Structures are given as C-alpha cells and as structure tokens.
Amino acid sequence: MAKVKIVVSLIGVLLLVLTLAYFYLGGFNPIKTSLTDCNQINLIGVEFIGTPQDKKIGEHFQMVEEAREDSPLYTIYYKEPEGKRDTLHVFIGYKPKIQEEEIEKPWSYLPISCTQAIVARLEMNRFVMPGPEKTKKAILAFAKEKGLEVEGVFIDKIISSDCVEVWAPIKH
Image (cartoon, rainbow, N blue to C red; front, side):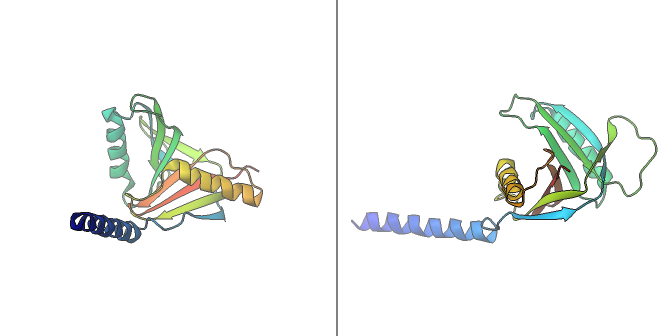
C-alpha cells in the first residue's frame, strides 16, 4: 500500500511540474485574433515544391535566413503534406528594405494584395505553439463572428522563436 501512495504521489508531482512548465512556456496563452488594415505585402523569396525530407527545403530556408538580416521571415504554405512523402508547396521569403529591379533565380517577388487582414498572434514558446490547423480555425471563427470572408491565403510572419503572426487577407 505504501508503494501505491509513493507512485501516486510521484505521478501527481510529475503532472504538476509538467503543467507548470507548459504554463511557463506560454502554453495557456490564447491565440489573439484581430482585424487590421494593411497595404500590399511585397515579399522576395524562394518557392519550394517537393517532399519535406528533400534537403533543398533546408537550403532554401538557409538562403532566405542569410538574406533577410533583421526582417521577419514569411512563409506561405500552399500545400501542406499529409505525410513525409507527400508534396509540400511553400514560399519562403521576407520584406526587402529596398525593392531591387532584377533578381536571379531561384529568387522571385511575391506581391500579395491586402487592404484588411485578420491577424492571429501567437506569443508562446515554439514547443507549445498550436499547429497550423488550430490557428486557421481560430482565424476562420473570428471571420465568421465578424461576418468576413478570408481570401484563403495564410501568411506566417515569424517574428521570433516565441512570436508568430498569421495573416489572412480579407476578401472585398
């Protein structure tokens, strides 16, 4: 009987420690959604179509990381894979400080029309951040509540490892 009490006590302490760690990392922070005015978003970056295991995706991310300096990283997932061997289609880029006239492949410009957008702000450690589907659901619920319709493009703006904004332009 004493062993059972010790095991139950240890499980209780472990659950308490895990809950406190989750709280400390921001796991209980809500997804903050708001409506904001915006102008056209002009990005420069590289597009990747392939499988998540392809080493080229890492190379593309590295290229953009080196070029963006202190600008936030932007990602737009056009097609997210169901599994490791499914196709992934993503644009990885940043807002350039100066719009250059000519750029070399694989770089390209991506202008995104935007007059208003729903912004979901996630301020928590990346280990406890909700997945993309939960964030999209929060954006779509906010849109429905306000009687708005989103374009269908979700733009991830990665400000830091603990702060991400997901922008969803509104249809007009």
